[in-house]
Amino acid sequence: MLKAVFFDFVGTLITKEGENVTHQHIVEEVLKRAGRDDLDVIRIWKEYEAESSALFKELAGKPYVRIRDVDTGAIETVAQRYDFTIPEDFWEISIAMHERYGRLFDDAVETIRALKELRLHVGIITDSDNDYIEAHLKALGIYDLFDSITTSEDAGFYKPHPRPFELALQKAGVRPEEAVYIGDNPAKDCVGAKNVGIFSVLLDPSGAKRELWVNCDFVVSQLSEVVDIVKGLQED
Image (cartoon, rainbow, N blue to C red; front, side, top):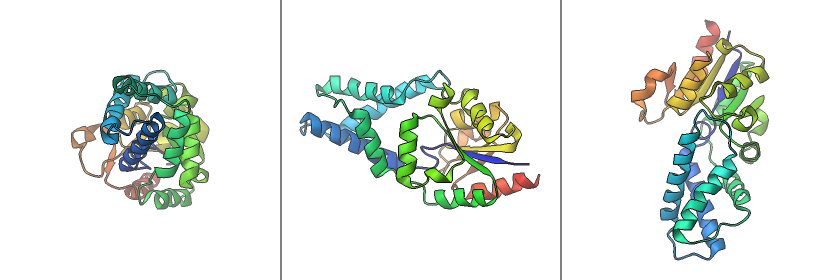
């Protein structure tokens, strides 16, 4: 019988569009502090995103490195390119902007509440620093909805390494076959969950990842669909 449901965070509970807006505001504040209103925010943001994405791709499945260091390294690379200074409190700026501009999917809260009504353990498994995820969840008003939060900082590894998933199972006190994991990345989320025996659900609102659906047990276009999947697994 199913006993636990775990969620990824970015792109699963909060929208990528909201993340883009957040990161644009981070760049805007950095450039403002540096006195560089001559630079285009969107251009610098795109280059910052490219640097950050490349660094994170290299970390998939590897031992944990602080995300604050990865993000700071990404913006420093761009800063050197355009000769501007990064504020010493860059990470604090980043967290503050995430608190202010992060946006949940419209059906995120109702989905979480529906799962809790089924008396399931509801948790998060995310590649994140602890201070970031706690501040963000509290700002969104959903921190207290979760029974457990497992980060790459806790686990010492990034997804799809088994350790984040195994640690989350330990916290929930459930076996792999008693759990479901919902994420938006077929390679990190679906493969990582399935490799330890957890049911995997891919959130793919636009169907853009159709070629990789084979890696996942279930595919949904909106979070609310997860509730029926979970109910079906409970009956098995």
